Amino acid sequence: MSTAGSVPYQPYPWQQSLWDTLVSLQDEGRLPHALLLSGPQGLGKQTLADALVSRTLCQAPGPVACGHCHSCAMLAAGYHPDLMRISPTEKSRQIRIDPIREVNTFVSQTAQQGGYRVIVLKPAEAMNVAASNALLKSLEEPGDRTLFILLADTPSRMLPTIRSRCQHWSLAVPSEPASLPWLTQKLGDGQEGAFWLRVAGGRPLLAVDMAGAEARGLRQELHELFDALVRGAEPVAEASRLTRHPVEQVLWYGIAWLEDLIRLGLSGDSRQVRNTDLLPLYRQAIKNARVRDWFRLLDYAREQRRLLAIGGNPNPQLVLEAWLVRWSALLRS
Image 1 (tube, one colour):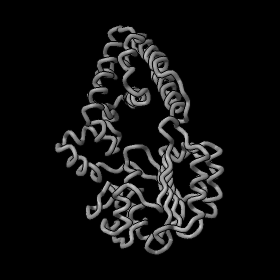
Image 2: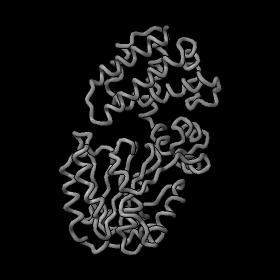
Image 3: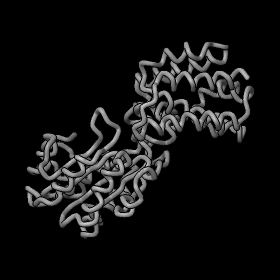
Image 4: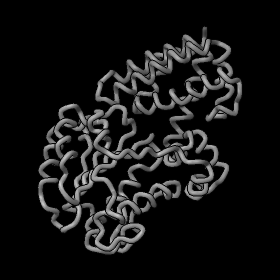
C-alpha cells in the first residue's frame, strides 16, 4: 500500500490501455456506478481496482491519485470512511447477507468527505444467493456518487441478475511483450522471467509467485512425487507427504500439468507445453494411458477445486489420496 506523499496505486503496464479508458470515462462523468472486473488470478485485478478506488476518492486526481491529499493519506493509513471492502471472513468461503446489509446502509448515507462512496466486493462470486439478492436494490438504485467495484475470477458463478447490473470489463492475459519487461525487472533475469511467464500461462503476477522459493519447493516436491508414481510408489503414502500444503494449491499444479499433458497428447507438439521441464514425465504418461483417461482425471481435479471454491468441505487427505490413486493407475496401466 502507498503511504502519504509516496507514489499512489498505479495500474500495471499491461493494464494501461484499459486504465486510460476508465480514467476518460470517469473524467467525462460517464463511468457506470457498478463495474465488474473479471479474469483469472495473476493479472492484477486487485491493483487495478485499488488504483481506481484511490483516484475516485482523491481530492486532486491526475492520471492517478495524487498521493498527497487528506483522502490519499487516509487510504495509505488503511482506513477511509467512504470506502467499504467486503470479502469472506477467514472462517468462510462465502460472502453472506449480513455484510451486504451493511453495504445497503452505507450507500444510503452521505459521504463523509463530500465525494464518492466506494464499495469493493471480492470475490464477487463468493456471495451466496441471499447476499446477492440483498445487493440488487443497491445496485439498481445506488444514489449519486456511488461506485461499486466487483472483482471475480469466475463471473459465471455469479447470479445473472448481479452481472447484468454491472458494466463488465474482462482482463485478458497480456502479450509477452506487454508483461515480460516488468517481470524481468521483478526477477532480475530475462530468461528466468520468460520461463515462469510460460509456466504461469502468461499471467505475470502468478509468474512472480511461482518463481518464489516456497512455490518452487512445492513444484519440485510434486515433480519428485509423480516421478515416484511412475516407478511404482504407493499413492496413499505419497499423498501423506502433501498434507502440509493447501489442497487447492496442489490441485492447481495437477490441473496445469494435466492440461499440458493433454495438449501434448492431442497435438504431439512440445511447443504447446507450458512446463517444458516436465516433458519427460509427460511423454512417459502419454505412453501409458489414452488422452480421454487424462481428461477424466482433469475433470475430477477441476470438480474438487470447484467444490472448495464454493464453500464445500471435502476431506483434503481423502481428495489427494483419491486423485493420486487415479494418477498412479494411469501411469502404470
